[in-house]
Amino acid sequence: MPIVSPIPLNPLADGRQSERAMVIRRGVQRLLVEMGAAVLPELSLATGRRADLVALARNGDIWIIEIKSSIEDFRVDRKWPEYRLFCDRFFFATHPEVPAHIFPEECGFMLSDGYGAEILREAPEHRLAAHVRRALMLRIARSGAARLTAAEMAGVSVPSLEGEGD
Image 1 (cartoon, rainbow, N blue to C red):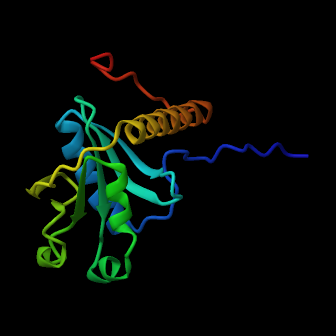
Image 2 (image 1 turned 90 degrees about the vertical axis):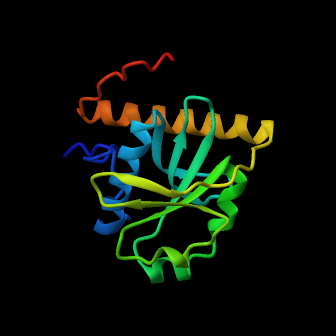
């Protein structure tokens, strides 16, 4: 009887995102890392919703970035206002073929080409309540640790981060 591992072959990808969304995500992740943030994709929130990207800045600020790969992707999504309850700043991110004017002015806006991204509109700040921040920090830490453990158990080499104690 063959042994079936409960750990996926590539524990760092879940396969639900389109190729275009992954290109947008890669560019935004590169920008956020350059800014000194730790980034966690596809984080489940207390409501059961999944944030496309959650960035934890060095100062403790939490950003959620919702990726939209097309006009239709944006039009059918009505869940994004809920994400504001779980972040200090909320952004949309897309690629150059999606018109920027469709995204609400009250949200931040990033443009990504896959190699990098640029913040074209800063997101207004709406500070999290202390108890929500604590719960979210625990969720981020536990999810990140679980993914790291799964990756290592699957044989993926995961280097230590420079300056992670800062």
